[in-house]
Length: 361
Image 1 (tube, helix red, strand yellow):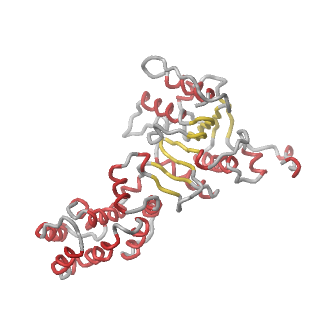
Image 2 (cartoon, rainbow, N blue to C red; image 1 turned 60 degrees about the horizontal axis):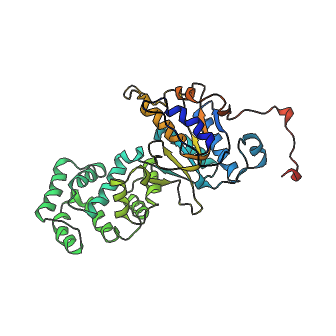
Image 3 (cartoon, one colour; image 1 turned 180 degrees about the vertical axis):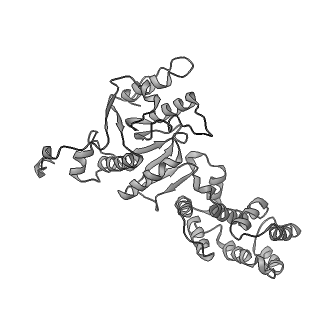
């Protein structure tokens, strides 16, 4: 990190127990850290989207004049990360980035993975790849087809009696004579026969899309996010393995498609450990959010302060901290004079505006 960033971050972490941390910057001196106040989460998101567009050359000159707070060093999308304390903060940010046409990738284990239909879809393909996974069979039959315990038990009994360890063409023919006559199980078994031949060959996003169509399941926000995660994997076994064993940094989803030119990274402070980016926007550094606290989650000041420090030091060259009218108590630990303060959408006086000349570009 640049010395300007370390001069803000070290006083924060040195409030925690232990010896004084001493770090010597290896980067040259650069841009002062910005501490900007936003009126709302939406205001914060709009500013970030506009500023990223300006940094990457995708915004018009009038907006650039209004929003610019940095030097004109050109940036690519993959140079930039947006960090936040909880995944819930990402919803507004994603909406603003999509509005501005900014490509992004969300990293980390997201709430949509707990959706019942999403769990049912994933359980179905886990079962195809590993028919001994009885937990996946139960989740799939319950969440997708709403089978009762009796039907689920009947399905599992057939698998056990035939000692099914792997589903292949021979095993499929053997089970077909036992499961097809059971009309209640026909809908599930039809899907097994339809998708087994391609489950290891076809791309996971395509398999899931076809599965939803075959089962006449409409697109929901959790399913859309699942598809946006699946599109980043080459096959279903790899995708399911990543979901099962992947760390925060391994789980990614795109914004509707994959961008060959790179994308902005969105992730939680927990997920950002060990990573670094030329530019970091650190969001929601405000009361109740950092340190994070709720009725069921009492704040742990030392751990939350460490997370704030982690977020700050993910930035190599530029750090922009976003706060509110009720700022985080941690901001008090940053020495006066170490940051440039301002408001994200401070309006200019209309009489002071001047027309830009093409020769000024």
